[in-house]
Length: 494
Image 1 (cartoon, rainbow, N blue to C red):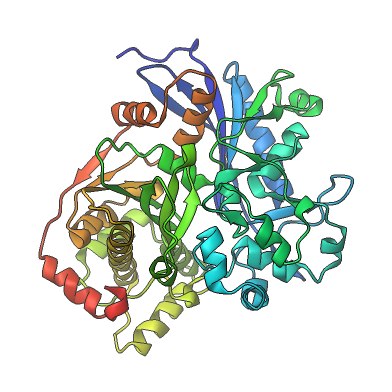
Image 2: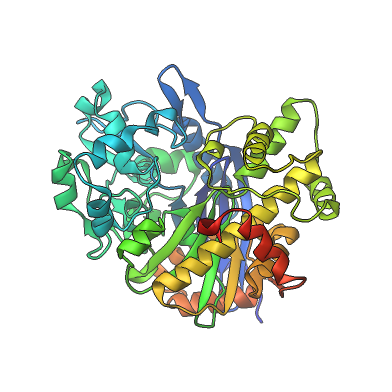
């Protein structure tokens, strides 16, 4: 294999997650794919009197600082941005942002869905959008926003990555993988649903033209070029701006029948399909049909992923402890198997706060004994996540009429050996873990593809498989132990 050199094209990937943001440069050649993190910054929400908000100005500054660091590393061919889904900013008629965007974990969303469902029933919504019912879906957030002065002044709605692209370039658009998470996107046609937008009394003009991954999204504004040191005219490329869509684009799959789990703060577990599954059974099982690259469908469910462990650690730190992740995982490996299991998707776990106490309350309410130390909590969380991966992927395969051959577990969770092994054990399927940086890789590869340096998805997945560190896990232990643990969660959770 030939090594990359400073002459290989460099792409800057802005990757914003729920707790931190990064700017990563990627050098791409036919045989190599090398990522370098050039800047990392915190993503710390702020609680204002009217609710929990994203500090998007701090995120924007962190992004600019990262792009300046990227410019110092050599010529940058283009910039791409991916973030989480569903959240948005509102612009007034002058293009100014109307307040900091709300955080999807804000309490205003708890009852907003009722107003939407009173107009469009759950079956009608699903038949069009194919979207999993989650209280923070954009369509429900908008219902909570409509009684405000900001809403009265709003003329344009931009999802988070599109807002940042707008500030870099001055161009307005909506990238489809993120637009498909709003509940106002037609899963069959791949366009905004004018029918739903009209039924809900929303102004169609709020929703900008759609962009596909790989489309040009403008060039850097002069003041952005001046600050970052990137040349005037540096292009910004629309990538799969929903971070999960970028991660799935970088899954190193070569065989048919693969499933994926993109595991970070959330676990997104599902299949890549050619068409949405919009059956009533799919709606009742709460599966989502979100847009992927090249018109594919990400048929999946959101599972409350490593958020549970992250919040446990924050609670222990507030209480004066400072447990390392390595130490916690070692304690978890020694803890008693299946001493306690929970449903990670219980709504009680959604908001920030004292997660160990919430786990205790759920376990006590189901007749189980709470753990007696951090290692027990970590084992409970990881075994419960493995069970959630199992039931979600088995249901997805049944609903889509697929046979599964392998699970690709990507994202930060792929570094967690216990979770990877227990996912293999629980499902009875081999697990390929990695790449951990799947989101940034997908971002970079889609930019490289748009600039003609790599081929289609099959080619980019082969490049990922050749160049990135992967680990393989085969099922071990007693499958019956996992069956019995699943039975304790009830028939709907098997």
